[in-house]
Length: 179
Image (cartoon, rainbow, N blue to C red; front, top):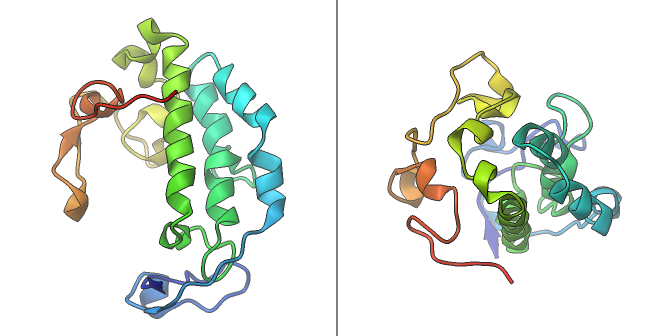
């Protein structure tokens, strides 16, 4: 398999590829599945703790970790675990086919969490509170609250779609559920 992106510099003392690691850099896939973050975040207690979070802010703080700290949560933790080339390169982890299993699990957890309280967790009011409810990451720089009518630009990957249309796996353009 050929990986075309990265490595991104500054991680594990690696030298960045062209354009700071974001330029075209074809090479063979290397895998480096490190156990430290996987052991910490990919376990039953993390799953249970995610499902018990009462609101989107607490859910996202566990899932994503506290921004700008070493607590990166299970989402970021597995990005580093499925390291690709070189190991622990957050930005090149999508180059490893195993990465898509990880994001399927993130989607599955989100779906289960929503279904534990569908009256509030599918509502715009419940989704736009706290630092993750804005249109910029962690509300930095300060920005307005996101709305279900806001459009997600999928670039070359797909047509634009609104946040409201992607809130559920069983409505909108989607038609799937998890067992």
